[in-house]
Image (cartoon, rainbow, N blue to C red; front, top):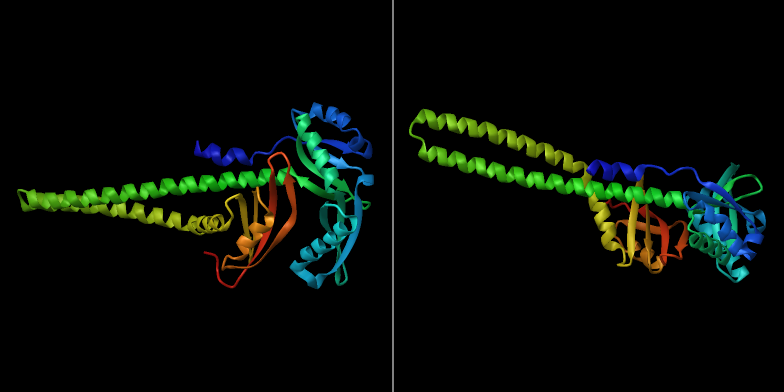
Length: 312
């Protein structure tokens, strides 16, 4: 059962059917729902027509490094203020030229994206991706259902690790109780032995058994030591999150920690809560927030730059 818990979430779904979305579909949502109603048995990838999306090429100095994402977010905010309505932004790094790096951005009205997702939901289809193809042929992703599936799989793996840890702790406690029983049996044998030879044989047998039990305990402690840091980090992050937020995955690379999750409240509250953790230097969005209108939740991806102090 534990093996199924760990393996099944990692399986991948079948390839998705591609559906082109045009301006006509936004004007005729009923027709769009009818087109998507035939996709109940599998996922769909929605490819937005170029007329629905504004494409922009952004050049940022390479020395900006990790701050490039913040620069792109600021420029997107300026565009949103100019339009006077919320927007959805998909970004992809394209190429490096000299001292600059070029990014391609696709900008879509948030209201248009919400209408498309609502039509998909009411038709019973399942969204695999919502993408737009820029003039250079690069795919920019607005919604990635595969990433959420991967985060769900990672959550299952984490739960499986916690279950395994609980089993190992129970086994450790059982071994400690068994060792105490052996010691009590040895003391009783020493008091009640009728001859020195019988007492000696009993003591030797009990000693050998105790050594075997201790070896099993040492092996379990060594096995536990490998998972303890990840479990402690997961627990500390969960404690820091607001009550209405849930953590789905963590990924530590060098001095940067990437986490994914969802919240029914403002994402800014999650960022402020994690920014107060003593071992984080800064917290920022790794990609734009995705609003799930059906579940009334916001799915977020955050990047935590770690301070010099090590993880818990």
